[in-house]
Image 1 (spheres, rainbow, N blue to C red):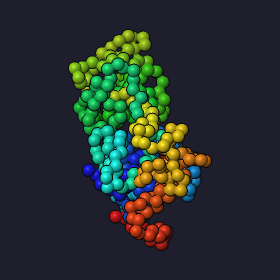
Image 2: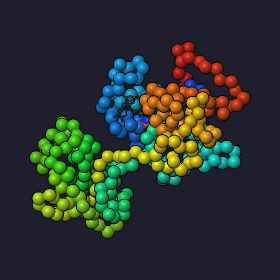
Image 3: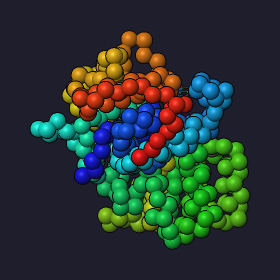
Image 4: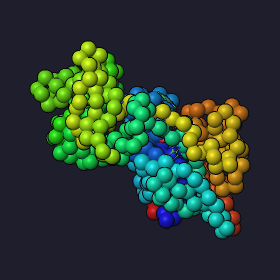
Length: 336
Ligand SMILES: Cc1cc2nc3c(=O)[nH]c(=O)nc-3n(C[C@H](O)[C@H](O)[C@H](O)COP(=O)(O)OP(=O)(O)OC[C@H]3O[C@@H](n4cnc5c(N)ncnc54)[C@H](O)[C@@H]3O)c2cc1C
């Protein structure tokens, strides 16, 4: 059981900044995210896109903003449970919340902040009937640890940056013993330099590039032993492999959050703008995941919401203590 003061579900920009604001009040946070890395939409959808409306930064890349937020939070030593979706929240008799993830990891705290943004990012799966039978037995939709593929034969499918970048990485770092990249079209959606690199590696015989083709079935007894690739002109071919990695992107769904007894409106959690509390005392919702009159889905607004929510959380955790606002310019940042 991981114990902390505040469990934050969602390690996007809003969850990360909330760690800092909680830390100033000497409250420790533990973040849970279904993605393998922190940063939410900024890391997953647009890390290289500049943002122009973060106060004090005329322009900052989304990925850089996340690096800065992580650095800003680091004096307060947040804990992380990454790559695991939170699936349930239970309350104990002594007013503690237990948040359990899909892998059974349990977290306990008197306060939960839901900073779940658009929800859990679920992988887009190819339409292969029995693909679920092979999940975690050779089929992975996200590469969490490249070492899993050391010395293995990998078939990657997809035409975006993820498929291109991982094909290059597993080949150039000599991690996988063989890499085949299968894509339905002959043109790719990824960065031009990544596309060129894949073509160069294919010309050198280091990547097997199969375009205008799709993986249509998986072979193997409980574990992936190969895939069947249907080529638009050449018909079907068998490709022996140990891993089939379809990287078709992720789609967000509110997912388990909608089953936690919270008041939901327009696919978002209704909050009181006094302190961004939900209808369940002790649970707050901040950032893109909440809704109220005049709500704006902006990072800036989420920062404000998290800041007010931790003030309210402090009062719940320490009803007998008075919290006096102190400027960081006066006090500095005193981490744990
Ligand atoms: C292309 C694009 C451009 C944008 N440009 C701007 C801009 O210029 N300026 C601006 O202010 N905003 C911009 N936005 C919006 C901005 O990215 C969002 O407002 C911001 O990311 C919200 O932050 P968040 O922390 O609330 O949620 P998110 O960034 O969505 O993070 C939520 C996290 O919660 C996790 N999560 C959800 N449910 C669970 C669960 N049950 N268990 C575990 N984890 C869970 C998700 O995996 C995700 O990582 C842009 C968005 C997009 C898509």
